[in-house]
Figure 1 (cartoon, protein in one colour):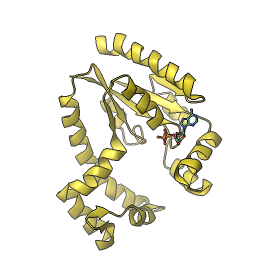
Figure 2: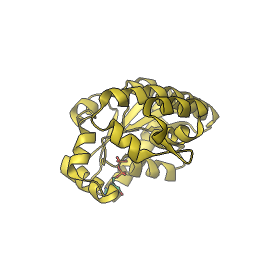
Figure 3: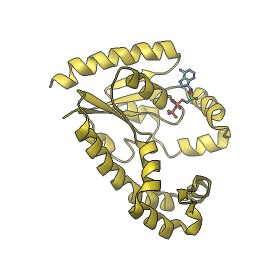
Length: 198
Ligand code: ADP
């Protein structure tokens, strides 16, 4: 069974960028948010429950209508939690099946929320990606065409870095891409020689 390495970091820290660097090293990568979105469109059970929670406007042409959902859950923690309670158990099962099929010594599970929901406890080690808050905000504004206010609202639902650093085995400061790639290679070797050997 492959070891499970969690990869997390706040919005805009560079998780996905780092995940792609591991993929280049032939490490299987599971992007939890992408898989959740796919399951929301594919799973009949999820669909039925979300329609019940949000109403008919949640799906357009059989596809989850994200702007409607985003508007509904923005500033409504209770609704967000109800949605998570529908989607997360299905993602957890899907992930377990995916891991069982992998043959690599370890896999990466990338998720924005890993500590906040206790999922880190199912990982053999955690890699945390960090960057200054201002840098992160600027990167996300550029990537998503969003506003500073929107980025800050998402950040407010995520733990601060200090709290996450204390629980992580590896921390990558994502300043320049060449530096980050070097760090990724170092961590890859370390995981293979330490965590995968136990
Ligand atoms: P996350 O998945 O943590 O939200 P991303 O990996 O999508 O973050 O990175 C946010 C944005 O910043 C993306 O557009 C990405 O291309 C860019 N980016 C990531 N790392 C760097 C870096 N070291 N230097 C410059 N831009 C970066």
